[in-house]
Image (cartoon, rainbow, N blue to C red; front, side, top):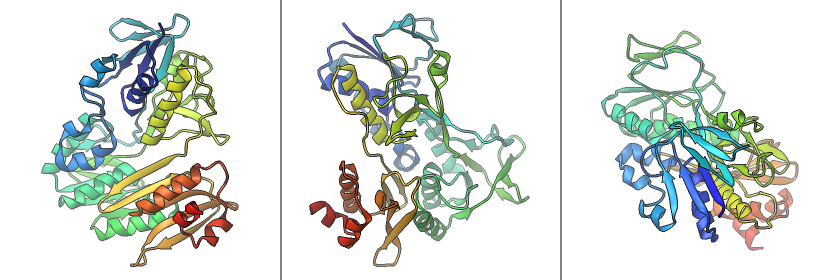
Length: 403
């Protein structure tokens, strides 16, 4: 009987287990997670959970799922090593768990900037439920918050904190917000929103250190300015957890290197989700998204079952909720050379079409779910979507889709 061991019990890892059973896999499945409790959703931690603190709403599956699906779930367990030659995962306890197929869904961890003061009381990171619980409790007693990092997590928290009445400053090293993820027009839209909400956004600003005698009292910038703070959130990106794979002799380069079917050089071992570096359209890609986690999981489940399937090529899509604004992105805008922006009745940009050459490669929308869904369907088609076709449809993606 085939034995599948999954290392990592987040969205990606749990989805592999669920997909295998849904596809009729009859072998043994062991799911090993390094956190206590049930596997849970991470995206709400910086948004809804900050407001209501209800962890019960985060569970990806009820406890009954594991018994009904016959999945051996091992929470609060650390995989210390992988021995490919012996086909075993070695736990920190010394227990050895044998496998015929191994799925590495080890995720990513926060990247900490090289500045002093990160270990002071009042300085927080946000990756897991324990982090979010501490941060939410600290927010209740705080008056001034400084967020280091103007990406999705930092801005989502900034919006919640400002709504809760805190004085919030966002410090971003780049010259625009969410620079890795969105086009300049959307960066500007969200900059306007946060500043109008009372958030002090400092662009092209570098943090020199966090000051305070035992507890954070401020953030010193490279220009000598000190921003007062009794709560500091460091949200400067993540790095993939690749140490297990590297120690096992697997290739690592900005993630665990896998082929077009998400296999490592060892055909028994797969890597998925935030930790995987996979080819997408011929480009080495690593994505941090629920979509990638679940689509990777379905592909790997079919591969384990021996299905004949085309190379992985699911369209990436993302979202971020910041106050009343819902940002949704279909496709990847990296490498765009031109854009077209559409505006709402107030003149605010609510859609950006990103092109590379004559080809539409990504669509960003704000509070436009219909356009987003149309974009996902269009960009998932095997044939490219041309600029001429979009313009001929009056930039109406739903009309183009229907045609």
